[in-house]
Length: 271
View (tube, rainbow, N blue to C red):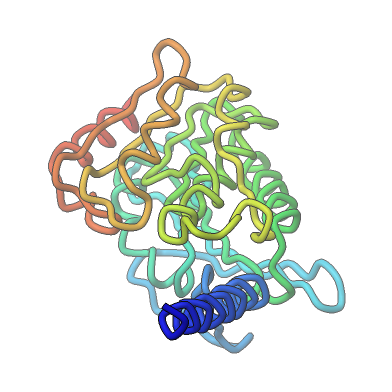
């Protein structure tokens, strides 16, 4: 009994140490865990096949916002899509989705977050919101708010939802959205008090009830990153006329492989 008790106490000590070390790693290394940017040199030239304009906006000595303005390919100009991408790489990774919008007569403005692509500066939640408002000013200088669609993908859904809650737009479209950041992480680390450890909240659930524009959500049932059950928590927050489109079998990064999404998106963009 004594030996077993000593073993149990030793195991508990080891488990406690592992738990504490793991918690410290999550707290201090969370930016490396959550965000996966690829930085580019300031003189990098994109070789996108679509006609585009590369825009850099110096904000201060350390911060520079870089965005790409993709031109519409349709002869009829319908408006502009303000696109907020996910947490990996940079604009180049998401440019493959641009034709789905430009073929319907929409320009697409896509920004890179601090540390992504040619954008510089320290990434913070407040800065994500501030930069989204700068991008909105550029978009609104080209088209009126009733011709502006705000689009968020994955991490960008919280940013897009916040912007749409404080600025007018034609529609808010969210691809693989989350209830908030802590709920996504807690799914994988239920033993930690993630809500008090993570610097980033991005509470989509707080913003959606404030959005006056129509909302369309796309979510796959086999999403391993933002689970279907997590995204479904947003449904009660939607107003009459909003849509939650379920893509059966869809994952986190392959929803454009499904006809339902493409047809529904086409229908929305034609309106």
